[in-house]
Length: 287
Image (cartoon, rainbow, N blue to C red; front, side):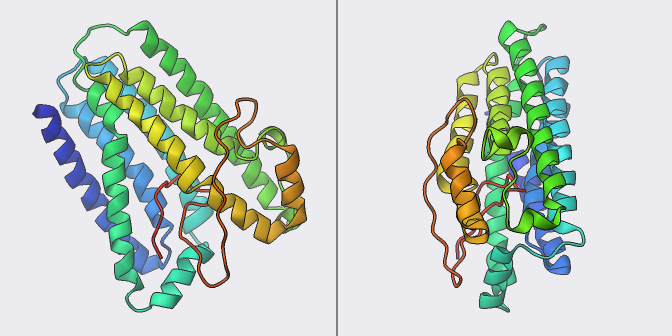
């Protein structure tokens, strides 16, 4: 029951933070704020669980540090690339235009859905907060190593893409540099591996098997619901045959081929609002 109480506390904090983000988005008129809020919510929850959990202090704060380092980098990246002095993503802007003046209120449930998702995905940090074992298990050490490698890979992929996108030719050609030579979505792949690492670290804790649902959920959302399907559909619309050739010669996720993503078709009048290649916010915004 204490675990449930922690989770409810986390939900309240996350909902409050996402309400503040929703209010911020009204001011800047950019719904990509939700992506920043989602990452920030996970950082906040991990810190709260570490601060008040009854488990071994070192373990609690190591898990919190993993969430904070990952979430801090992602939040700053999204702020820079998607929010600050940036035009609103075309999909968000399309919905805002078609539903004005009620659009702002339609965004609120979406922001709150991200708050709930953050609570669910913070399960590894919650479970670790109750593990009283006074030393690390071998699987926890292995998870730390895996997390470090995945974090480095995701950061590198984002830097390589950002460096490519500032070039004039980036609007009509596809990035094939660095990790993007071997995978069409190395950032998503390493993002998923980060969640695998969180789950493995939590698996040594009581009820740790529950944490395995987090990478499974992320895999489904990124590869089947949003993320890759939306990104590829948009890339085909913008880059045409160049991106089709890229699809034909480059795997979705690199050497470890993951499930083929669903196909999503966009029209110019109805664009589902989903995370773009610069985002990891995994829920779909209904139109």
